[in-house]
Image 1 (cartoon, rainbow, N blue to C red):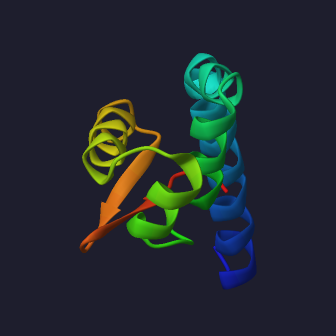
Image 2 (image 1 turned 180 degrees about the vertical axis):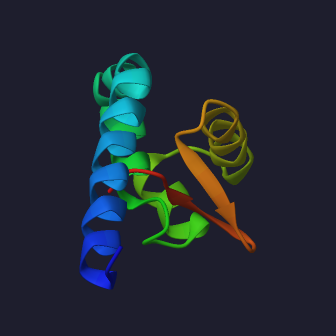
Length: 89
């Protein structure tokens, strides 16, 4: 198999896995989108510092940390060093 064919196959696998993840997380994402503060938090996870997220959402830093741990357990975000990043962009 050539490198181009391998790349094409890997891209297809990535696309299919993305679809599966979206389907499995659809309910969780829907509940997040129903709450403006959580939606803002999700959209900006990995982009803004936790103190800035706390200020903008009016959530305590501890509450944000708890939400992130819950989202991580559901597979929505992953720990990346000392911060989190979204599985889906």
